[in-house]
Image (tube, rainbow, N blue to C red; front, top):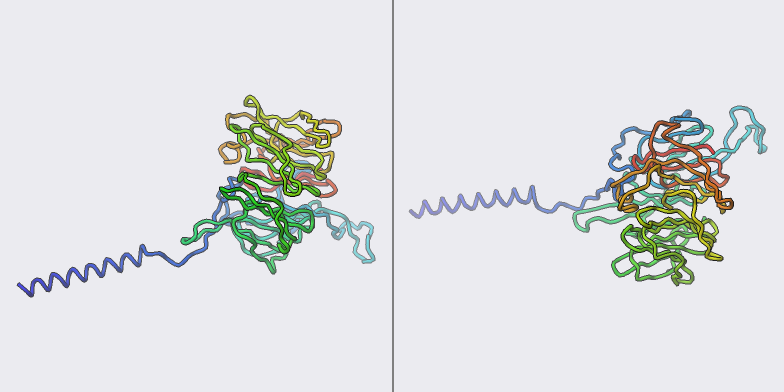
Length: 406
């Protein structure tokens, strides 16, 4: 009897030992593993960072889809590019602009980050050459804010681990990929200001804190603190503007931030978002009234607001100069929850690109991609070079990069 009890006890101990081993092997916590999320900032070109459709360097890069219209990439890029004026060798035998025996001609280099690899590429517009200038591997980058000359970019992506969960990382990446570094974690915004500054925003349920630092992130000082936690901030020359998170169901407000104080310049308006002109003297803004989206501009000197002849969102526009704006304008802009459905990727648009003369208040069609290229583009992150030679934009639906030679 005693022997039988001992055998049974031994068997139970063995079974318990096996169970504990199985638990630790399959279920116990593993060491923290860094994971790069594929789509942390929305639905711009979601889900394609597996490296398929790799970029091909060299001459004849990009796909010409119509007159002056080029698709630079088929796969997604990080949202935000730099369009930089450059001088390149003239293979056709132009007139030399230097003492060198090799003639040089002006061109525009578009610098962007391939989302699949995190590598930086430079696409020279008229020469149609593509060159990888950095092989730093940072896959899954969603947003990029560049210094104007394209020499440094702040790349933003999400990381997660089993211990601390998800965090937004911001990495300062030089154009050659060497000497990069992380800056503060979990920033809501990291935006280059001019050629020497970096604006960062930290938000929480208790409010927001805006900070300005040098481009190398040193010398930081607080610009403002606010009890508003859902701010989007736009630096402009010598000043800052902000608006509350846009919603068709909630009144929004626009502010000019001066010496840490918030001065209301717009609102209450449903669906409000804004975009300041380069000088900060005018604001382009959109709002919703009666289920209809409107676009307008306000002169801050006299507070005169003027309706514009197009309906779109300010996030689909860029000020090329103080008097010229380019916008992606949806052929149909309707829905009970615009703009939030668009932000969340629940709806997409098919845009025509328009040029607005702010002096004459006249809009001119630049290109209709559905007619010229037989493709539908939901244009975001519009960018022009300093001489307004080219217009670059990203398709929100696929993340692909496009260029139109103006």
